[in-house]
Image 1 (spheres, helix red, strand yellow):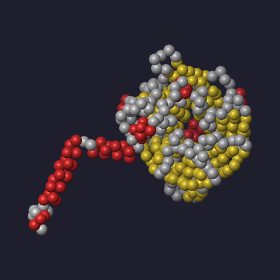
Image 2: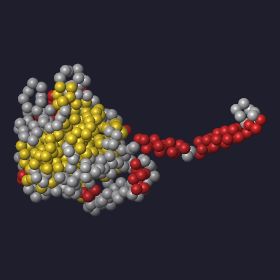
Image 3: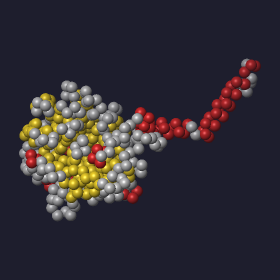
Image 4: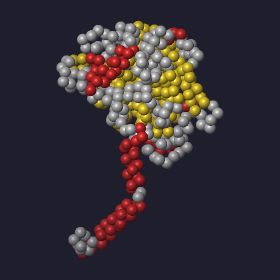
Length: 464
């Protein structure tokens, strides 16, 4: 990764990051610009000509969570806010706001869709934080503050590995693990990165599958609450050995969970019952030097596509013998539709754009990839976007940019462009160059005159 001075869209903020998100405009009391067909066409073609709707809001904020955990590492635990300028493609040199959380590491976070605040997963509980707009300035600024609201039902519940709201912000789901010390999880992440570089199968390194040892996690618990009343909807133990990821369907009717063991599970939120099981396939691990025989693929992340609310697609990342893959599921019958191998390295972060057209993944090697969901081909790839493994990433609401974060304390924003359309645009511009047009006209006129008056051997046509 380039130095900060040479890479304005890459910054290091001195805190190992575990979570990142774009801040919704509603958090600072502004609404996103309403796109027009003309403006959308300009953006998709990568045009430099500004239009009224293509102009970004005065401030585009990003929120990061992370830290050094418990102990005396000297690395603070904090929530950070940074700003991003689309015009200059640059992140703020320093965080615009930092809220320290003491000895508690904010590991995972979920931003309320209505912009009300953030819920963070701490080692033993979950805490609610609120936006703190700064008044009295020409340009409205944003900060963060601890909330007076105490989430009693989320006190002393242990480390939660997944947090998410439904689209309306009326339901909150949490998934965690029990009887595990968080510093073991940090150690696991570092060992995972080191072992994967030596091409060892990722299935050996899940919390429930350390080589030659007992499972670190005793059970995983799934909790679903109405928000903000915190009325319990679902409270299930042993859903997975540990709950890795959760996601609601666009209409909020279903919740999907994936974990470190067993199949993925689909839950009916209204009836609070499981309705489907997303089975794993047995894969032959023959692409690495170690012969581990036939093993189950390992699910990592799950995300619904928002492109079609009536029949959305479900994506689940999986580690197979040949590397990281993305599995597509039909959500009517909950059947596997296809599996696409993307990259050799394990996938450490995953996201789907709001319009469902783009997928984004980060790897343990620090690479970032943007994938066209229709063709499942890699559209953009930034190798070594980070020096450490990518812990979190998110595509902006308008699909203009991707933010990614890493354990190496770095943050990066990658602008999203369609390479094919940019190439077509470049050709179109080249075609209209005056000199080229004059040359083409001259050649055409010469050929026309030649074939009108004679043949290739110099004899007049009428004499042949």
